[in-house]
Image (cartoon, rainbow, N blue to C red):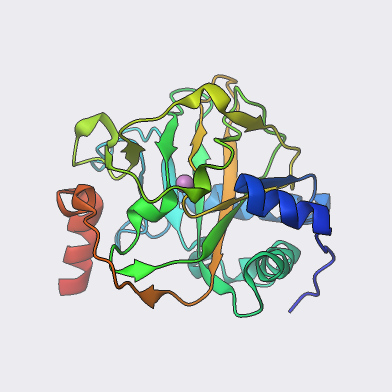
Length: 262
Ligand code: NI
């Protein structure tokens, strides 16, 4: 395992807990970004994990052969084990432990590629709206772009202090349950803060922080590599109903089900 090279200042830790997000200029090196870029593009070109439901269009109906508006791969390191031992991972884990406590552990990762043309918005949402309604979480996501990323390319945007909210009602994008992606029902984005980043920078946000990325209007591909960390989830005492997940009917679910039967 690589050794972490980053320690957050108390000011950064306080900012994260107060605002629900934080941006850093560098979580890894240019050399490691160059190394990851080739792997990342290869995985998408091969549609790694598609058969088992780990590659799909986050913002479209995801039929086989259809152009994808927001292609995503869950657990890219499963298809490229050389991604397991990176400085990015070591620093991300160290940061998560500073923010959540020493019991914080790696909970998953994904890659979201936003094509330079037809790259769709990721609508405003809270990540926890995708998770298990029966569990209590204390978790965060670290979002790293593999190229310099402007607002117009689809950098992260946050609503400060929204992380104090409960999980709000969501619906499938376009109200179409065939689409994996979720959108929060009501949002006032007038206070949104955009975080343009250099390649290898990152943002950090809580599982309930409202966030968004715009359509990609640059003609160049935007690549983001996201890692999720949290303390072990606990069974909730208060029930809640994520009805928007129960009505999902995606091609991805069909492939997961077919792979399970094979
Ligand atoms: Ni998200």
